[in-house]
Amino acid sequence: MENHRLVLPEHMNQYGFLFGGYLLSWVDEMAWMAASLDHPGCQLVTVAMNEVTFRKSVRHGAILRFVSLKTRTGRTSVTYSVKVLREEEVIFSTEVTLVHVDAEGRKQLLPSR
Picture 1 (cartoon, rainbow, N blue to C red):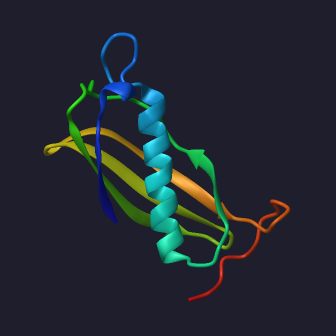
Picture 2: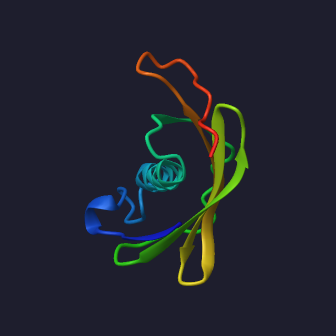
Picture 3: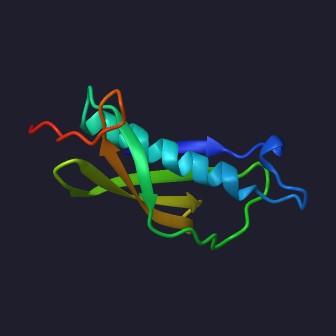
């Protein structure tokens, strides 16, 4: 799955760069959307991001491209590789693992497709 996000002035930290919390939130959202499209009807929650290393700074006005690819499907969880690019340069990447849970938050088997 691929999506884009425009970095606006309200996304800046006190030094004029993209606040990392926004980027992490967008990465989490992109992984969740990809997982929800791949596993419709499942209640999925994030349980892990494997690494958080901001490689490049970002200023407002940048258009970021998010690319999410499924890398692993387990019995109850699914993992996506998420890359964030500015133009063709990767500025951030991580793997996000989401787990299928019931209404009480207990792990559930992913439905077989």
